[in-house]
Length: 217
Length: 217
DNA sequence: GTCTATAAGATGATAGAC
DNA sequence: GTCTATCATCTTATAGAC
Image (cartoon, rainbow over the protein chains, first blue to last red):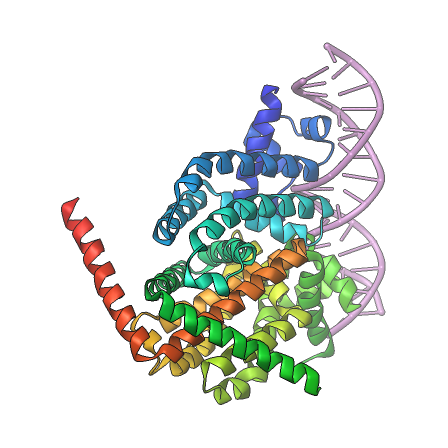
């Protein structure tokens, strides 16, 4: 790949992170890259397509970095620990901010929407595998949906990142609270058969409850 | 308040929701309002200040709508039910999308950052009161931090909303998974003293664990 | 308070020299 | 592949008529 193309891809990512989707333009990106503005259109046709390519690259790079560590995770505690490390590293690299800005712009731009969908699906698929493995044989498997959980984790990270830029202390307390929820899940695990029975009967009761209200309406 | 000012405030909110922070301008807002573009600067000085005023109005309006219902919540089940209704209504009104776009823009614009901070703090303070009331006398009170939880709920809603615009099905599965976590919390509640003991010993063990690793490093 | 007109600059995108 | 120059269009913001 040509030097200019690489420079533009990297500059697109860091500019999106630094000035946000509202401040992003061919000129701001080109300045960061130290490259002529017209080259964006020569190499990528539109600004939007450059951002798409930059996102794809960033996602694949950082996912490759974690794949080995994901594979090693065997317990819930290990998963939570890796989750914290991953979140901190990705945040420091600016990848989460980049995703959040991409998603904000995606509400209006179909190109960006596709890029965001790809990034989220790629991450979620990877997380889902680990969650599924960790929750197997846990009492939680009766209620947990690994795919939904993986998506929820992604969504929460995005929300937390935007929160972080607005109210640092509040975002931190939110992250701590979510980690405490992890403790809750661990305790549930420790309780084993007791928890499993309680969860199963709660699920049965809830299902009956909603069925009843469905049929009586 | 003059008719034009009201029109502009409403138009700012709905335009931010519809075209996002990247597409927001004095002209797009004025067109939505059916009003001359120059009037934005006459009434609000800058576009950014108009958005700030519009946010404040939207937050106070919708919070006033829920205050009575918040006060009535007495149990965790009721809180989860209200939470779902609130989320659906606010989403349909576009208030969550407005907040998400505001937060995306806030990363660069100090005016918007202040508005976002105000909105989040206002909502979180209200949620915190209810969470605190509901968790009192629950086994969860040993680990739960009501303020952090309230902030986490806000952050997750924002993330889910952006997710929604990008991948509807995935966002829905994430929401369902989070509601299942609610079931988990209910079961913990049902388990009463058993859960309380398990949580307390887990908390003690975790604290000892982290202290140990602190002193051995 | 509201309008038109306009300044002064930013934006995406292209044509054409090198 | 890269540059300069330029376009049409958009932006915030103001001055001044009504």
